[in-house]
Image (cartoon, rainbow, N blue to C red; front, side, top):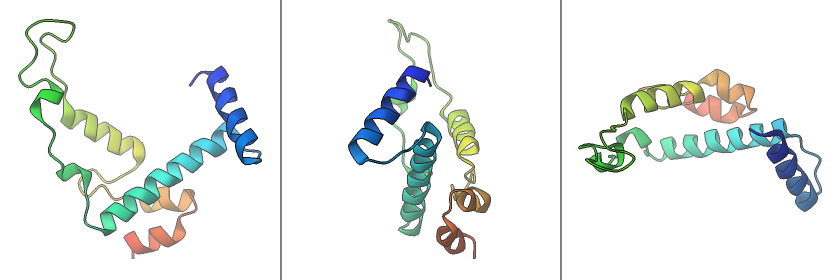
Length: 114
């Protein structure tokens, strides 16, 4: 992220809320929200890996002209690396117990990892 952008976002957030967050505090809050939202969806039986992606979105078949001519995205590799970066299981998409505990989501970790 660009330092100017980080400073601007933190400044706006702190001015609006009256809090004194740093960029890392905001990033961690966003990560906590993402993991909590995902854990809720898993509890309700929603797993994003089961959502179909229309082939045209990833370039199957690839465009024949224009800036994306001949381009096909490797969606499986993107999902694999994204889940790894999030520290989520690559089959069940469950956030790891370590990740949940590091974010202070102990109660969620107990539910997902009894």
